[in-house]
Image (cartoon, rainbow, N blue to C red; front, side):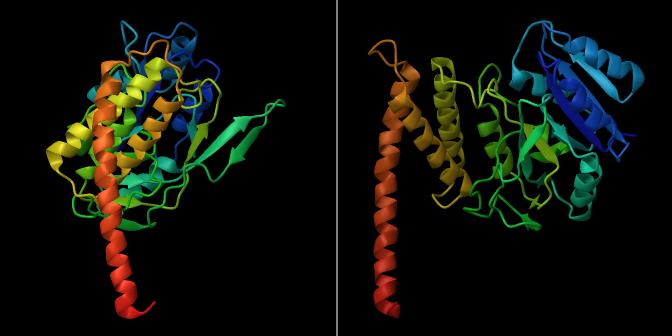
Length: 316
């Protein structure tokens, strides 16, 4: 019989943190789970650590990459080996509440949900080795304990967390999607595509995920040209999907796409390039971004005219 949840844990040079992560997973109150650790050619003792855990717990499976493939492909590999009813991606330097799997699975089954989204808590380690928590980290703006059909609902996104660990998903649904390999921020377009085709998503007020804020993490490290180009490629990928699906302006996908492109445009403006010749991806991005902003201006003026007419009509 298939496990209720497959926990997919990409592993790469996390010998300092992976034990705390695995401790939180093997201690889950829901025992009917599988833990798939994907070692992406670690050069430290990470593999030896997860092998020690696997020798003591048969629910832990280890997938070994022969070459380093990056986080996106590690998640794809784990998904390919999974057999659980639901899938949850866990970063190996983070950890989760030991009740998480049981509560998320029960909520999903009770509400017949394809995706369950939740809240998260960030933490840092101070000089004394204590965890300092930041409870407001990545709280999403969607209404809690409500089911959404995202194929029909429009702008509900707000500050929804689009990182891959911020939700669990039915395996039969998520298996039709994959992460782009070899790029940073691969979960942005993955999550938006996934959500936009989901007919039953439920957002809950529970915060089971503890996210390590470390200066060496991708999201907090200094922007380099590789990261910048990968962000630009994400915008291009998002635009291609938007053109294919033709979502209206009010759709959450379109709204989030515009916000993300605006943040990337700011990165480009602030980045110091080594030459005056922009990479072709940035030229392509600038061209469609300028068109996008002209369309946004028209959209804003249209709604402003409607607002003015309504004020005159109802005298407010």
